[in-house]
Image (cartoon, rainbow, N blue to C red):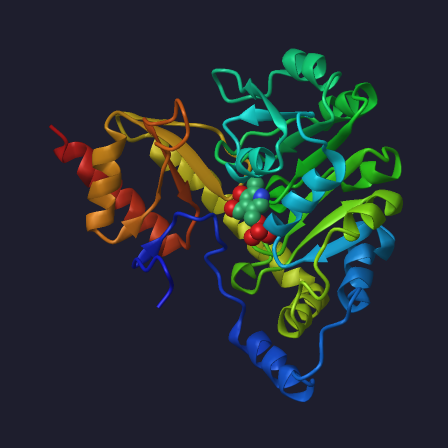
Length: 336
Ligand SMILES: Cc1ncc(COP(=O)(O)O)c(C=O)c1O
């Protein structure tokens, strides 16, 4: 039983489509033939090489870890001295702020605009004094994005480094990866947990100039990714085309889910380029609870300052999306 069991689980921005059974069986067959008594590869070339080819990068530019979350701490530790200014936007994935505080950084927050867009002027101004600027694009929890030209301006202006988390890049269809060839102060976080559908196996990576990757690599624990996850990640990279089709399907579903949500009275939708949608509801708490009673789990936003009227829903399968919409419609209609 998964830790947060619900019949319809739309709360963690996961891929609703599991790895096809035939592919799982292939992976399991191969797993039977590798020795489990041996440590995994120390610098897993079997994944870094094909990943590098896919992204147009040398394997030396890629650091793997058991989920991209695991890389945030080492990146901060490598770059920041206690009290150094770290710039983040708000609201953003909460782990950035939490990790920054654990590392003793001085967190400077820039609010997104009223429409949850990036405030270009404030970002350019503040990044000029930041040791590290952290940007998330598409942004979790808003799904909004930043123009890559603005990222380039920041990269040129800041004396520090920029950590760009693009966990949801595949759903946006754009990526900053090629900028690594031009900007040695850019570090990019990516994950196998979202479009690639491997959240349970925990594989993520950092892409950066080889010199930066080497320095951050020194702070990682050895053998971070286990033999089974490495094997699954490699096999998944070999069958990329089904993933691309699936991503396009999720994007189409996101767009129709957003359109349908917009039509429900009392709901305001934030346009999203990710696999989730942030929306405002007149009585967000009651809607969340009503959905939960129907075993539909979405994400309340009341731990994000200023977002207590908002909810975030992950794009599910067609059937899940339809059941979610039907439930929202019913609950909203019956709301006093
Ligand atoms: C912006 C962002 N980065 C990273 C992650 C986590 O990635 P991983 O599963 O690779 O640790 C998430 C997960 O929700 C996320 O929203």
